[in-house]
Amino acid sequence: MTGFSLGQRYIAAGAGEGTYQVRQVPGNALGAYLDGGKIEVFCNAQDAAGDTMNDGEIVIHGSCGDAAGYAMRGGALFIEKDAGYRCGIHMKEYEDKAPKIVIGGRCGSFLGEYQAGGIILVLGIGSEDRCPVGNFCGTGMHGGRIFLRTSHLPPDLPDQVAARQASQEEKEQIRPLVEEFCGHFGGEPEALLQSGYYLLTPNSQNPYRQLYVHN
Image (cartoon, rainbow, N blue to C red):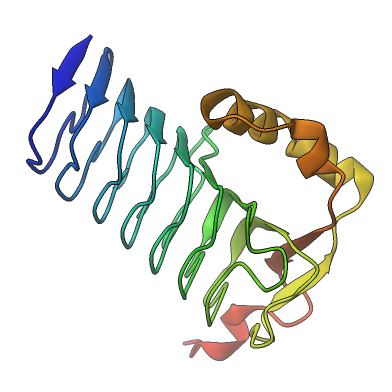
């Protein structure tokens, strides 16, 4: 196990193994290109945590800045509280890898921008009276799934994103993520899973490819 107490950038970048603990706010690109190691942050994190991570796990006991999980293609990112803008931008699946981001609180605008794969789960804990995401959720989304624990659907979803109430079977698919979140940060999985969820997916009847020029 390796411990860090300074806020430098690129902590554990590309690490294929090992456990890393961070006890003061790390700099940008925490765990960039992470390939199997585990990082646990006992405070907030700055921008681009998990940038292009391929495998492993990042657990943040606090909030994080913008672009968390940028181009992420594997592994899991757990954020106890809030996330900034453009969380999960360009997130994609790669061969047998399917990345996962779980946000306990709220997140900023452009969640899942250009998302091409994987799962983003926003639990919205403490924000049950309002939508837990900012503006332009799912803009450019053409793959993957976004689960929102809320009864308040974002009012400005693009036409290329389909939204529906998640079925019980679909909620069971996120049970392991909810249980792991509660294992890291506390809470009752069953209480969270009893809530209503919206599921956002690309709209197959009106996909983004219709907006592009074809040769």
